[in-house]
Length: 302
Image 1 (cartoon, rainbow, N blue to C red):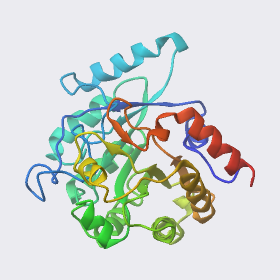
Image 2 (image 1 turned 135 degrees about the horizontal axis):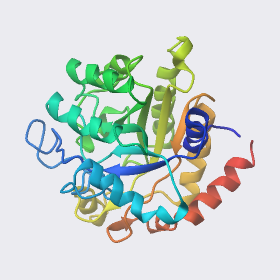
Image 3 (image 1 turned 180 degrees about the horizontal axis):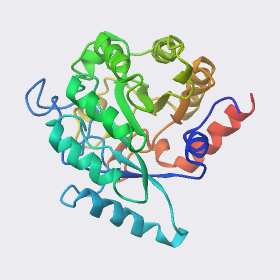
């Protein structure tokens, strides 16, 4: 294999197949509550990228058990609790401790993964993550998307690249795994721009020469989706940009893999938006077809 997938990594760490349960902790985001902005990132849905999450009206324990019930026919499973919707470290530390501990205390949960922004990692929160990581593995997922200022301003990310790098550095040695989200196909970005972002993320792993660096880092490659109700949809409908074709996307991913260190886990090669709200590209709605085509190209160069 040219790369290590999330499934392979989890089998290596936990000794068995692990599933992720998407949890909604009822958080908001500084890009929505007025701290930075009120409209969110340009591509972000009203669910804060937690379109597949459970209902925040239920407790964390209830959400886990509701998700388990849907797959109970497959027999006993083990899970990563994925705090996905909005910014999952953007709250007082005592609220975070209660939510994360409730997940970690569940006997079927082997670890937690926390999606957040690098500008929402104050010292007390990082200390809490380190504390939780002593109980069960803690992963932190950082939404970088791009290293290019023109693009980050366009998508209304709301923080500078130096903030992302600082976030990675403060998490090193405190949590088990640091995952960076990258969006491929942002309006105005060339293939060279996309590869430069991936090269930068890969470089932060290569800068870490500690003995624990192996498999400490991960990356998610995400196709740009246009979701109904977002400001990005308005831009798309106005003809300001076009989405990538499947062939072009696969070609870029293939080149990205060449840039990623072999011990850096690739958690995602693409993604699928909720079909009921997906505006474009519609080809991405057939995930099985996309992955089959992608694997055919990628595996041809193993």
